[in-house]
Length: 326
Image (cartoon, rainbow, N blue to C red; front, top):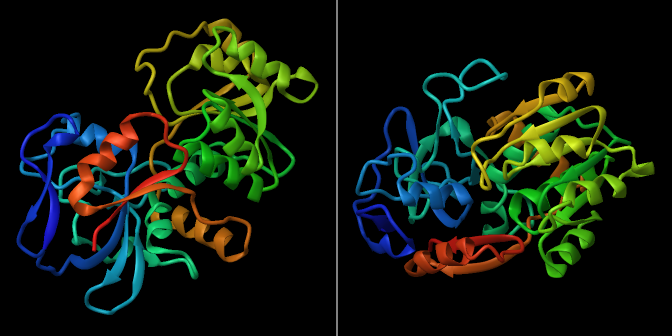
Protein backbone atom coordinates (compact mmCIF):
# COMPACT_ATOMS: atom_id res chain seq x y z
CA UNK A 1 0.00 0.00 0.00
CA UNK A 2 0.96 3.68 -0.22
CA UNK A 3 1.46 5.76 2.90
CA UNK A 4 2.90 9.14 3.91
CA UNK A 5 5.90 8.07 5.98
CA UNK A 6 8.17 10.15 8.20
CA UNK A 7 11.67 8.81 8.88
CA UNK A 8 12.55 11.80 11.07
CA UNK A 9 10.79 14.50 13.04
CA UNK A 10 10.56 17.96 11.55
CA UNK A 11 8.76 20.24 9.14
CA UNK A 12 6.14 19.00 6.65
CA UNK A 13 8.88 17.97 4.24
CA UNK A 14 9.66 14.89 6.36
CA UNK A 15 6.39 13.32 5.08
CA UNK A 16 7.13 11.30 1.94
CA UNK A 17 4.66 9.05 0.13
CA UNK A 18 6.13 5.59 -0.41
CA UNK A 19 5.21 1.93 -0.72
CA UNK A 20 4.97 -0.01 2.54
CA UNK A 21 3.69 -3.52 3.39
CA UNK A 22 -0.06 -4.01 3.67
CA UNK A 23 -1.22 -4.17 7.32
CA UNK A 24 -2.13 -7.68 8.50
CA UNK A 25 -5.25 -7.99 10.70
CA UNK A 26 -4.99 -9.74 14.07
CA UNK A 27 -7.44 -11.10 16.61
CA UNK A 28 -7.64 -7.61 18.15
CA UNK A 29 -7.26 -5.39 15.08
CA UNK A 30 -9.27 -5.13 11.85
CA UNK A 31 -8.19 -3.54 8.59
CA UNK A 32 -9.91 -0.49 7.15
CA UNK A 33 -9.16 0.46 3.53
CA UNK A 34 -9.24 4.23 3.74
CA UNK A 35 -10.62 6.69 1.22
CA UNK A 36 -9.75 9.87 3.12
CA UNK A 37 -7.85 11.12 6.16
CA UNK A 38 -8.52 14.53 7.76
CA UNK A 39 -5.78 16.56 9.45
CA UNK A 40 -5.80 17.98 12.95
CA UNK A 41 -3.26 20.18 14.72
CA UNK A 42 -2.42 17.12 16.80
CA UNK A 43 -0.97 15.51 13.65
CA UNK A 44 1.47 18.39 13.26
CA UNK A 45 2.66 17.88 16.84
CA UNK A 46 3.15 14.17 16.12
CA UNK A 47 5.20 15.03 13.04
CA UNK A 48 7.32 17.43 15.08
CA UNK A 49 8.13 14.66 17.57
CA UNK A 50 6.19 15.97 20.57
CA UNK A 51 4.69 12.53 21.30
CA UNK A 52 7.84 10.50 20.65
CA UNK A 53 6.31 8.38 17.89
CA UNK A 54 8.59 5.45 16.93
CA UNK A 55 10.26 5.97 13.56
CA UNK A 56 9.59 5.33 10.75
CA UNK A 57 6.04 6.45 11.35
CA UNK A 58 2.76 7.13 9.55
CA UNK A 59 0.76 9.87 11.35
CA UNK A 60 -2.96 10.55 11.10
CA UNK A 61 -5.87 10.12 13.49
CA UNK A 62 -9.01 10.73 11.39
CA UNK A 63 -10.15 8.43 8.62
CA UNK A 64 -13.09 7.02 6.67
CA UNK A 65 -13.16 3.96 4.47
CA UNK A 66 -14.34 0.39 4.01
CA UNK A 67 -13.90 -2.35 6.58
CA UNK A 68 -11.85 -4.95 4.71
CA UNK A 69 -13.50 -8.08 6.14
CA UNK A 70 -17.16 -7.00 5.97
CA UNK A 71 -17.35 -4.31 3.27
CA UNK A 72 -19.04 -1.85 5.67
CA UNK A 73 -18.49 1.87 5.04
CA UNK A 74 -17.15 3.28 8.30
CA UNK A 75 -15.54 6.19 10.10
CA UNK A 76 -12.73 5.65 12.59
CA UNK A 77 -13.00 6.98 16.14
CA UNK A 78 -9.31 7.66 16.88
CA UNK A 79 -9.58 7.24 20.67
CA UNK A 80 -8.28 3.69 21.23
CA UNK A 81 -8.80 1.56 24.36
CA UNK A 82 -10.37 4.33 26.44
CA UNK A 83 -11.24 1.89 29.21
CA UNK A 84 -14.20 1.29 31.51
CA UNK A 85 -14.43 4.71 33.21
CA UNK A 86 -16.23 7.36 31.13
CA UNK A 87 -14.84 10.06 33.47
CA UNK A 88 -11.26 9.65 32.12
CA UNK A 89 -9.24 7.28 29.94
CA UNK A 90 -7.48 4.24 31.37
CA UNK A 91 -3.81 3.21 31.20
CA UNK A 92 -4.03 1.59 27.74
CA UNK A 93 -5.56 4.65 26.10
CA UNK A 94 -3.86 6.13 23.06
CA UNK A 95 -4.68 8.31 20.09
CA UNK A 96 -4.47 6.65 16.71
CA UNK A 97 -1.37 7.85 14.87
CA UNK A 98 0.64 8.59 18.01
CA UNK A 99 2.46 5.31 18.64
CA UNK A 100 0.97 3.04 16.00
CA UNK A 101 0.66 3.81 12.32
CA UNK A 102 -2.23 6.12 11.55
CA UNK A 103 -4.51 7.12 8.70
CA UNK A 104 -2.23 8.91 6.21
CA UNK A 105 -2.23 5.67 4.26
CA UNK A 106 -4.36 3.51 2.04
CA UNK A 107 -5.14 1.15 4.94
CA UNK A 108 -4.98 1.14 8.74
CA UNK A 109 -5.42 -1.36 11.57
CA UNK A 110 -7.78 -0.44 14.43
CA UNK A 111 -9.88 -2.22 17.07
CA UNK A 112 -13.32 -3.09 15.71
CA UNK A 113 -15.08 -1.24 18.53
CA UNK A 114 -13.92 2.18 17.27
CA UNK A 115 -15.71 1.83 13.93
CA UNK A 116 -19.05 3.55 13.31
CA UNK A 117 -21.19 3.84 10.15
CA UNK A 118 -20.33 6.47 7.57
CA UNK A 119 -23.04 9.18 7.65
CA UNK A 120 -25.51 8.72 4.84
CA UNK A 121 -25.02 11.10 1.93
CA UNK A 122 -21.67 12.43 3.13
CA UNK A 123 -18.58 12.35 0.92
CA UNK A 124 -15.53 10.41 2.05
CA UNK A 125 -13.79 13.70 2.78
CA UNK A 126 -16.66 14.96 4.95
CA UNK A 127 -16.91 11.65 6.79
CA UNK A 128 -13.18 11.59 7.53
CA UNK A 129 -13.31 15.13 8.91
CA UNK A 130 -15.87 14.33 11.62
CA UNK A 131 -14.46 11.84 14.18
CA UNK A 132 -11.73 13.57 16.19
CA UNK A 133 -13.26 17.03 16.21
CA UNK A 134 -16.78 15.66 16.66
CA UNK A 135 -16.02 13.48 19.67
CA UNK A 136 -13.68 16.10 21.19
CA UNK A 137 -16.17 18.97 20.98
CA UNK A 138 -19.12 16.85 22.10
CA UNK A 139 -17.22 15.76 25.18
CA UNK A 140 -16.06 19.33 25.87
CA UNK A 141 -19.49 20.94 25.55
CA UNK A 142 -21.90 18.22 26.64
CA UNK A 143 -20.15 15.64 28.82
CA UNK A 144 -17.79 18.04 30.59
CA UNK A 145 -19.37 21.47 30.08
CA UNK A 146 -22.96 20.26 30.49
CA UNK A 147 -24.19 22.82 27.98
CA UNK A 148 -27.96 23.02 27.75
CA UNK A 149 -30.55 24.56 25.45
CA UNK A 150 -31.08 28.24 26.16
CA UNK A 151 -27.57 28.78 27.55
CA UNK A 152 -24.87 30.80 25.81
CA UNK A 153 -21.33 29.89 24.81
CA UNK A 154 -18.22 31.85 23.89
CA UNK A 155 -15.71 30.11 21.60
CA UNK A 156 -12.19 31.51 21.51
CA UNK A 157 -11.15 31.62 17.86
CA UNK A 158 -13.20 31.16 14.70
CA UNK A 159 -12.64 29.30 11.46
CA UNK A 160 -10.80 26.16 12.56
CA UNK A 161 -12.28 22.72 12.94
CA UNK A 162 -12.89 22.91 16.70
CA UNK A 163 -14.53 26.35 16.60
CA UNK A 164 -16.72 25.47 13.64
CA UNK A 165 -17.85 22.19 15.18
CA UNK A 166 -18.48 23.91 18.52
CA UNK A 167 -20.66 26.52 16.84
CA UNK A 168 -22.71 23.99 14.91
CA UNK A 169 -22.99 21.48 17.75
CA UNK A 170 -24.05 24.11 20.29
CA UNK A 171 -26.66 25.41 17.86
CA UNK A 172 -27.96 21.85 17.39
CA UNK A 173 -28.35 21.64 21.18
CA UNK A 174 -30.35 24.88 21.27
CA UNK A 175 -27.62 27.11 22.73
CA UNK A 176 -26.49 30.52 21.48
CA UNK A 177 -22.88 30.96 20.35
CA UNK A 178 -20.49 33.91 20.17
CA UNK A 179 -16.96 33.70 18.73
CA UNK A 180 -13.81 35.74 18.88
CA UNK A 181 -11.96 35.86 15.58
CA UNK A 182 -8.72 36.82 13.87
CA UNK A 183 -10.00 37.97 10.49
CA UNK A 184 -13.21 39.17 8.79
CA UNK A 185 -13.18 36.04 6.62
CA UNK A 186 -13.17 33.70 9.63
CA UNK A 187 -15.88 35.76 11.32
CA UNK A 188 -18.06 35.55 8.21
CA UNK A 189 -17.66 31.77 8.17
CA UNK A 190 -18.62 31.52 11.84
CA UNK A 191 -21.63 33.79 11.41
CA UNK A 192 -22.80 31.66 8.48
CA UNK A 193 -22.63 28.66 10.83
CA UNK A 194 -24.85 30.45 13.36
CA UNK A 195 -22.40 32.34 15.61
CA UNK A 196 -22.38 35.98 16.73
CA UNK A 197 -19.47 38.42 16.80
CA UNK A 198 -17.57 38.76 20.10
CA UNK A 199 -14.69 40.81 18.67
CA UNK A 200 -11.12 40.13 17.58
CA UNK A 201 -8.87 38.04 19.83
CA UNK A 202 -5.90 39.96 18.38
CA UNK A 203 -6.81 43.00 20.49
CA UNK A 204 -5.16 43.28 23.94
CA UNK A 205 -8.53 43.85 25.64
CA UNK A 206 -10.36 41.14 23.70
CA UNK A 207 -11.87 39.69 26.88
CA UNK A 208 -13.49 43.02 27.80
CA UNK A 209 -14.98 43.31 24.32
CA UNK A 210 -16.21 39.72 24.39
CA UNK A 211 -17.93 40.10 27.76
CA UNK A 212 -19.64 43.28 26.56
CA UNK A 213 -21.06 41.27 23.65
CA UNK A 214 -22.70 38.74 26.01
CA UNK A 215 -26.42 39.02 26.83
CA UNK A 216 -26.87 42.18 28.95
CA UNK A 217 -23.07 42.28 29.28
CA UNK A 218 -23.38 39.85 32.19
CA UNK A 219 -20.90 37.27 30.87
CA UNK A 220 -21.28 33.87 29.27
CA UNK A 221 -22.51 30.60 30.75
CA UNK A 222 -19.71 28.63 29.09
CA UNK A 223 -16.39 29.44 27.46
CA UNK A 224 -14.44 27.02 25.25
CA UNK A 225 -10.69 27.69 25.29
CA UNK A 226 -8.58 25.71 22.83
CA UNK A 227 -5.47 27.93 22.98
CA UNK A 228 -4.67 28.52 26.66
CA UNK A 229 -5.87 31.95 27.87
CA UNK A 230 -7.37 31.09 31.27
CA UNK A 231 -6.96 34.41 33.14
CA UNK A 232 -8.65 36.43 30.39
CA UNK A 233 -11.16 33.69 29.57
CA UNK A 234 -12.49 33.58 33.13
CA UNK A 235 -13.32 37.29 33.00
CA UNK A 236 -15.74 36.63 30.11
CA UNK A 237 -17.86 34.30 32.28
CA UNK A 238 -20.84 35.18 34.43
CA UNK A 239 -20.65 34.05 38.08
CA UNK A 240 -20.99 30.28 38.22
CA UNK A 241 -19.82 29.91 34.62
CA UNK A 242 -17.71 27.04 33.30
CA UNK A 243 -14.40 27.35 31.46
CA UNK A 244 -13.72 24.25 29.37
CA UNK A 245 -10.09 23.84 28.29
CA UNK A 246 -9.00 21.53 25.47
CA UNK A 247 -5.76 23.03 24.17
CA UNK A 248 -2.67 25.12 24.88
CA UNK A 249 -1.56 26.44 21.50
CA UNK A 250 -0.86 29.91 22.91
CA UNK A 251 0.64 28.98 26.25
CA UNK A 252 1.14 25.89 28.39
CA UNK A 253 1.54 27.89 31.62
CA UNK A 254 -1.36 29.75 33.24
CA UNK A 255 -1.50 31.94 36.37
CA UNK A 256 -4.85 32.42 38.12
CA UNK A 257 -5.77 34.48 41.14
CA UNK A 258 -7.46 32.21 43.68
CA UNK A 259 -9.89 34.64 45.35
CA UNK A 260 -11.65 35.91 42.19
CA UNK A 261 -11.88 32.28 41.07
CA UNK A 262 -13.61 30.88 44.12
CA UNK A 263 -15.73 33.96 44.81
CA UNK A 264 -16.89 33.72 41.19
CA UNK A 265 -18.01 30.13 41.78
CA UNK A 266 -16.32 29.13 38.50
CA UNK A 267 -15.70 25.64 37.16
CA UNK A 268 -12.39 24.98 35.38
CA UNK A 269 -12.72 21.78 33.33
CA UNK A 270 -10.02 19.97 31.39
CA UNK A 271 -10.92 17.68 28.52
CA UNK A 272 -9.24 15.85 25.66
CA UNK A 273 -10.58 13.66 22.88
CA UNK A 274 -13.58 11.51 23.77
CA UNK A 275 -15.10 8.06 23.51
CA UNK A 276 -16.69 6.08 20.71
CA UNK A 277 -20.00 6.48 22.56
CA UNK A 278 -19.65 10.27 22.38
CA UNK A 279 -18.96 10.09 18.64
CA UNK A 280 -22.06 7.91 18.32
CA UNK A 281 -24.04 10.68 20.05
CA UNK A 282 -22.76 13.11 17.42
CA UNK A 283 -23.91 10.74 14.68
CA UNK A 284 -27.40 10.73 16.22
CA UNK A 285 -27.50 14.51 15.86
CA UNK A 286 -26.46 14.05 12.23
CA UNK A 287 -29.19 11.48 11.65
CA UNK A 288 -31.79 13.79 13.24
CA UNK A 289 -30.81 16.54 10.82
CA UNK A 290 -29.49 18.91 13.46
CA UNK A 291 -25.84 18.70 12.43
CA UNK A 292 -24.49 18.93 8.90
CA UNK A 293 -21.16 17.76 7.45
CA UNK A 294 -17.92 19.58 8.32
CA UNK A 295 -16.72 22.28 5.94
CA UNK A 296 -13.76 21.16 3.82
CA UNK A 297 -11.13 23.85 3.26
CA UNK A 298 -8.95 21.83 0.90
CA UNK A 299 -8.31 18.26 -0.21
CA UNK A 300 -4.94 16.86 -1.32
CA UNK A 301 -3.83 13.55 -2.79
CA UNK A 302 -1.71 11.26 -0.63
CA UNK A 303 1.45 12.14 -2.59
CA UNK A 304 0.94 15.74 -1.41
CA UNK A 305 0.46 15.01 2.29
CA UNK A 306 3.33 17.38 3.08
CA UNK A 307 1.50 20.20 1.28
CA UNK A 308 -1.63 19.42 3.30
CA UNK A 309 0.38 19.82 6.51
CA UNK A 310 1.81 23.13 5.24
CA UNK A 311 -1.70 24.33 4.51
CA UNK A 312 -2.86 23.52 8.03
CA UNK A 313 0.20 25.06 9.68
CA UNK A 314 -0.26 28.33 7.77
CA UNK A 315 -3.06 29.11 10.21
CA UNK A 316 -5.45 30.58 7.64
CA UNK A 317 -7.63 27.51 7.30
CA UNK A 318 -11.41 27.85 7.38
CA UNK A 319 -12.74 24.32 7.75
CA UNK A 320 -10.87 21.02 7.57
CA UNK A 321 -7.86 20.01 5.48
CA UNK A 322 -8.26 16.49 4.08
CA UNK A 323 -5.99 13.99 2.31
CA UNK A 324 -7.49 11.59 -0.22
CA UNK A 325 -5.84 8.24 0.38
CA UNK A 326 -7.04 6.38 -2.73
